[in-house]
Length: 172
Image (cartoon, rainbow, N blue to C red; front, side, top):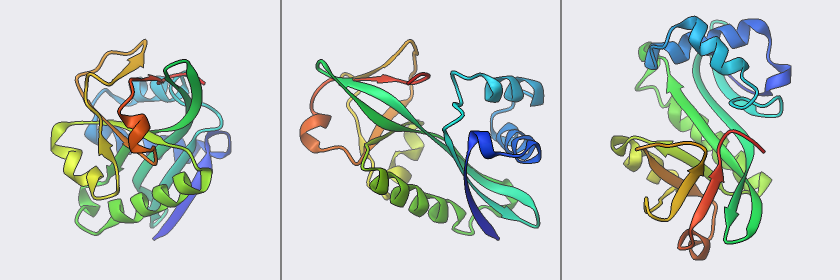
């Protein structure tokens, strides 16, 4: 197994195809729909990072991270948007999510930026193990995007987590 970290503009066509196929095993929108979403420059920016693990030349685990903006009060700052943690069904239970999450934590700390993600309720304990804090649903919103998912933050001071935060999800 080998770990990779590449920006969108450095991904090879085969890597993108494998990412899309892996994503479609979890979110069954179809290959063409996934490809369209991936190519939409509002969803994935050329400077976004893609963390993935390959085994026998196949991507078996994946995460997307990208720099975006957030607003606390009238102060606009950068944050890292965390999207799409997935491990191939055949490779689950082998600590691949732990390996990816440890690399994600190092990356976020090195960038010295907060990280925000959305997740289902059942995944909250998993992300809490890696230092993410659950945000009160009344304390954040995502600009131009509605969701029923839970928001979680990493690497942001508790003082700021108590303030209302607006996240720009699909743009910088």
